[in-house]
Amino acid sequence: MIMHGFKHNIMAEEELFLLPGYQDQLRSTLSNSIYDNLPEPLRDLFTTIDNPYERDILLLGTLTVLSGCMPNVIGFYDRKWVSPNLYTFIEAPAGSGKGVLSWTRLVGMEIHKMLLEETTLAKKQFEELKREKIKQKDADVSALKEPPYKLLFIPANNSASSVVQTLSENDGAGILFSTEADTLANALAQDWGNFSDVLRAAFHHEPVEMQRRQNREHFSVERPRLSVLLTGTRGQVIRLIPDTENGLFSRFMFYSFPAVPTFRNVFDHRGTDPGHTFRKVGQMVKEMYLFLQGQTQALELYLVKEHQDRFIKQFQLLTHVAHKDSGTPILATIHRLGLICFRMSMVFTTMRYYSQTKRDKKSEIKIQPTDLEISGEIAYTLLYHANMLVADMKNGSKYIQQQAKQQRFFDILPVEFNWTLAVGLGQKLNMSPSSVRRYLLGGEFERIGKGQYRKVIKEVAGEHLTYE
Image 1 (tube, one colour):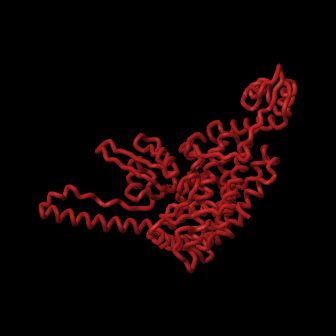
Image 2: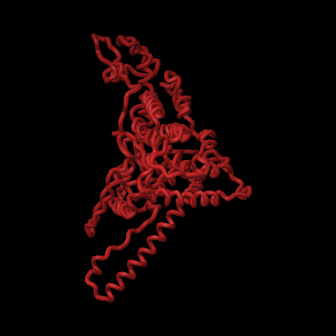
Image 3: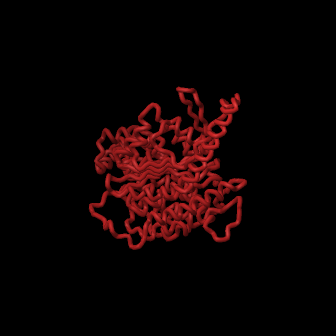
C-alpha cells in the first residue's frame, strides 16, 4: 500500500479538522517500519542505535548527504526536471546529542577527499606549467587560468559570492554542512554573506549568479544542485528563519527533539563502531558517485501512473486537512513537502538500484513502491515538526490558535444563520461579539439580509495547488 502512513492518518478526514485531533495523528518519531524497509546498504547503519531520536536524525542526515552524492540522477516533478537534493535542519537544545550527525559526513567523505586530491594534482600541474612559461618568457602566461577548486562539502562561513563560486567550480553541486547553525546565521546577517536568496533559488535548481565588487568577477550557476544539512538550537532556527513567510522555512526538513536528562554509558560499544559502519557505506557511495557520473545520459527516476495518482490524492487531502487545522502558514511547507517526499524516494531507489549484485545500466528506473511508502511516512513526521516550529515563529502560535478557533466556529454554524445565533455560538468558543463581527466580515461569509449571513463554501479538497 503506497504511503500507508498518510492513508492511515487521514482516512477519517472529518475527525482531523480540529485541534487537537489532527496534531495527535502526527508522529514525533519515525516508525520502526521505515527502518525495516530501508535499502540494504542503509539498514545496517541503524541496527545498533536504540535511541529513537538519535536514529531519526542520523537517517535524515544520511539522506541529506546522499542527496548531494548522486550526479546525473533526475526525476520529473511539477513540470520540471529535479535532482534529489534535500535541505535539513536538526534542532535540539545544547548537549542533547546532535553531535552524532558528524557520522553522516563520513558518508560523503571519500568523495570529498577524492575531489580535493584532484584539485591538489591539478594545482601542481598548473604551477609547473606556469613556471615553465615564465622560464621561456612565454607571453601567454597571463592567459593561464587556475584550475577549479573541487570539493563536496562547502563551509557555511562563506560569503555569497564565495558560495556561488564554489558551486560554479564544482559543476553546480555541493553540500553545505554545518553543525552550528549560527555559522550560517552570522553569514546571512552580513551584507557580504547574504546568500539566503541563493539557498532559496538553489532548492528549485533555479539559476544563481553573483559578482564580486573588488575585481568585478562574475560567477553564474545555471542549474545548482545544492544539499544543506544544519544543526542548532531553537533560538538558532528562529535567528536563521524568523517566520514562516521567509521562503527558507518551507524548503527545509525540520526535526526537533528534547534533551534527555540522563548520562549515557559512554563505554558501551558492544563490539561496534558506528563511525566504521558509516565509513564503509561512504566507500560504496564513492563508487556509486563515479558510476553515476560516468553515465552518458542522466538516470531518470519515475512513478508509474497508479502511484502518481495516489501521490497526488494523498497530498491534496493532506493539504486540505492541514490547512483547516493550521491555516495558511503551513501551506507552503506542504506544497514543498510533496517535492521533498519525491526526492527522498529518488534517493532510496537509487541506493536500492546501485546495491543490486547484478546491475544493468539503465536510462530509466521506476521508483519502488516501498521507497515511496517510507518517504511518505517520513514526510508525515516532518509535518509534525514543522507544525511545532510554526507555533514558535513570530506570531505563529497565536495565528494557528486563531485559525483553529475560527475553523471550529465555521464548522458549528449552519449554512445560513443570524447575528444572535453567531454571537451565542462564538461565546462557547470564548469569542467576543467584536471578534465574531470581524470574522463575519471576512471572505468566509456573505451578508444576505439585515443580521442574516450565509457561509461561502469553498472547494479545497482535490484542488491542484502549485508552488509559489
